[in-house]
Amino acid sequence: MELINRIFSGIRIRDIIDIIIVAAVFYKIFKLIRETRAEQLTKGIFALFVFAKLSGLLQLYTINWILENAMTVGVLAILIVFQPELRRGLEYIGRSRFFTKSLLEIKGESLSKTVDEIVEACASLSRQKIGALIVLERETGLNEVADTGTKINGMVSSNLLINIFIPNTPLHDGAVIIKEDMIKAAACFLPLTDNMNISKELGTRHRAALGISERSDSLAIIVSEETGSISIAENGTIARHLDSKTLKQILTDMYKPKDSTQTFMTKWRRKDEQGEE
Image (cartoon, rainbow, N blue to C red; front, side, top):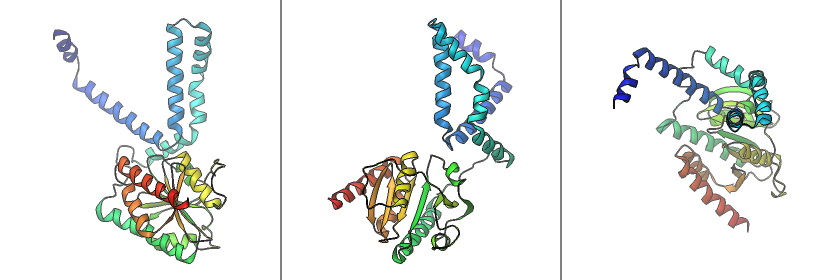
């Protein structure tokens, strides 16, 4: 008890403030890292640091020498590898939003309106057999993908989505990236899936939707240009031939806790697989 009292007696108010500020900075940095693929690279650098310390304690001199020398150039490597993320982070600070809430909370009528606009656009494009590819961003940031297209930064509306995908318009070829209730960018390039076992009926849009769903936790909506069929890709799998009611339910559940969303999507994927058989 005396030891605890001695420890806490040495803590000043300025020390608490110092800790809170550092914690807030690291929290914001972590959020910025989560917006890109830098999160996995950060884990690798942390693992390298741990192995370097362990090799020293275990007197593995050769391994320790290699790791220690690798760590000496770590700062330069970070500047090179994380250059896009560092630039984006500095821009983020420059906009004076570093210590403010950066994401909108979509609830109630706002969520319902956003879902309705997306569903209405997909239904209209389906009736007209106009191809479309819409990617809904979740926890994994898609800033790198958005940078390949044209920035929109506009509120989601059915008219805007329909106009984007009208054939022979400047932005119709590519994917639209949506973050919550904002259209971030259009005419974006997506990575194609490496899965060689998918149906030969699926075209480039479906393969691109599967590709982005394999590399992130995003949900991609595809409208087929040939059949007008609406499909959804998630976690490297695809659910096809959805109607507007089902699409609306999926999008509504997408903003619910993850367990509920995954259970719903799993149910519809199984239903789709049974239908194909």
